[in-house]
Structure formats: C-alpha cells, structure tokens
Image (spheres, rainbow, N blue to C red):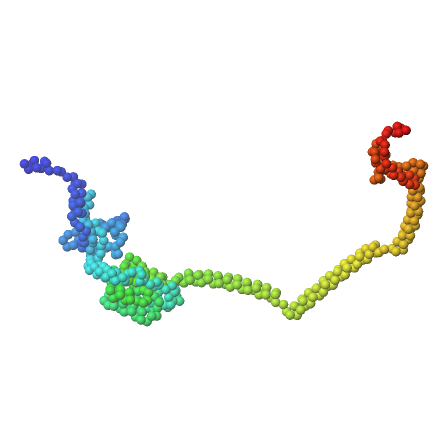
Length: 451
C-alpha cells in the first residue's frame, strides 16, 4: 500500500519546488524589519549590494539592488549594526533563502526616526511648513548673521564664500554648539538673540554633514519653534544635500549645504561689478548723448542770440537794403510813368488836329466842291433841259395846245376807249386852256362808224 501511494504521489522538479517555496514565502511573510550585523559585504560593478545579516545564533543572505542602495544616507561597511526593512524571498537558481532589502538604517535609530516623524507631523499640522508663511530673502542684505559653532568647518566654508562673493557685507556670528547635550537649547537661544538685536537682515543656521545623531539638535522642537518665530528670514544649511532635518522644513529657505546657503544670500561680486560696469557705460553713454544734445541746442540758441549792436547793424543794413530796393522800385515806377507819358504824348501828338493843314485842305475841298458843284450844276441844267425838251414833247398840254382834248370821268379817270362809256354818263372834256362837261346820250360805236 505504501508503494502504491509512493507511485501515485506527484514528483516535483527542483525549479518547481523553489518557485513554490518562493511564492509561499513572499505571500505569507509581510514586509518586516530585521536587525543584525553586516558581514560578507560585496558591492558589484552594477551597484547592487550583496551581504549577510547575522547575530549570535544565525545569519541570512541579503541583496540590496542599486536603485535602493543609492538612497542610503550612509556608507555600508563590515561589522556595522543595522536595521533593514526587507521582504523574504528565495533565489530560485541556487535555492538560497534571502532577504530583499528595501531600506536600511543604523541600529538603535528607530526611536529617533519615530520621534522625527512624530514632530514633523505635529509641526506640519500647525502649518509651520506652509509655503505661504515663507518670507523672501533680501536681495542685498545690510548684514548677514550666522548661527553655528566657531570651530565648525561649515563656518569656514560660509565665510570663504561670503568673502569671495560679497566682501562688503558685514557678518555677525552667533556662536552655538551644533551637537551634543544642550546644543538645541543654545541654537534656539541664539536665534532669539539675533532677532532681539535686529542687526542683521538674514540668518544662516548651519553645520556640516554627519549621522542622524550628529544632526539631531536641528530636529529638536525648541529649534524648530525658534526658527518659526523668527522675524528675520532664516536659511537652513544643515548637513549634505541628502540630509533633511526639521529645521529645513521650518526655515524660510532650505539650502543643500552651508556653502549654498552663503551663495543664496550674497550676490556674486564679480557679476555685480560687471553689472555695475554695464550700468556705468549705459549711464555715461546716456549722459554723453544728453550733453551733446544740450550742446547742440546751446549752439542753436547761441546763433539766435545776437548782440544788440550787431542786431542794430543788421537792422541798419536791412534798412539800407530796403531803402535801396525802394529807390530802385521808385526809379522803375518813374521810368515806367515817363515811358507811359511819352507814349501818351506821342498818341496825343498823332491825335492833335493840324489847323493850318486842315484849313488848306478845307479850302482845297471847298474849291473842289465849288468846281464840282458848278460842273454838276451845268450837267444838271443840261440834263434838265434835255429832259424838259423830252418832257415837253410828251406833255399832254402841248398836245392839247395843238387842238386835241382829253376825256375824263367826273372822278378824273382818263377815258381811253368808248367801250368804257354808258348812256347818261357825265364826262369832262379838257382843252388846252379850259374844260367842259358833257353827257353821253348815244351808245358807243366802233371807230369809223360814227358818221
């Protein structure tokens, strides 16, 4: 029966077994903290860290991958006692039980981290970390205050930077220990003292790098509240760029290093000198341009400004020129009038009658008129005689004188044909020297038939 059970039990491969164990470990064991001493430390070229954590009774293999190792605020070394936050796993290829380390801290610091997080949460809830309460730093502070230890290397770095960048700005040191017992109270007292004296425009609270224990004075509540209550803008320059303290969160500005803090409150002297030189050149150019413009305007006004004597001379010259122009105008006018007078005289001369000539001409015309009249008279008389003769020949009176008579109606119309007469018609007979009335009593007859 046991042989039958053995033959029906499934057979796992090593890979399947290791994979199943890995899944079981990762599922059943949560993320946890493990304390121990580092041994067999190896940092691969890839940046991954391989080590073992051990205590007096056992050890376990561990791996910390590069992306996690880079976040460590301290350097790993053999024999260091640490507390590691890890997940339990199994390396399938070798079947090695191991821990995948997420983060690490020196052993015994758990209480400090808890106090740090608790105070951070409390102050954040009070609004001491709000950006709205942060004050801007002065662009050109009249003086700079430093709260740190006189023996600190950070002080030398800050002073060196300030001497290089802004040697003209006074520096006031408010000395205080930066670590150890009583350091936090002294730091807070010096911040209060700087505010009471009001002799600086900005305050740098700084120290160099170190472990969390070394920097702990800047995580104390008394220092945080002194910074928050400061009327002077405060720059926190504590530790290295990866170090963060409560003072960093409360301060108006957090600098990654003490040197960076000094650079924040001091403009680069060389840059300022270059800027001033540029401003000086622009000012000189503007002044020169304005001066040249004013000089040109002065020359223009100077040309317009004339001495009274020179003005009188100029006016006298203008008057003389005007007189000459007037004389020339009058001469031209007089000459024109003379020419017009001569022309009028000539026209008058042509229009003036020549009495003697005209008298002679009139006498000649009279003589010629008389001669012409006499000739005309003679011609007219001769013509008249001719016409009279001819008229005499045609004059009815002459005919009547020769014994003829004319028959006229009572109206004076000449009767030329007997056919025009009718019985009982009264007629008038005209003779050479008399007239006689007659009455028609016979009917008219044709010529030659009367007798």
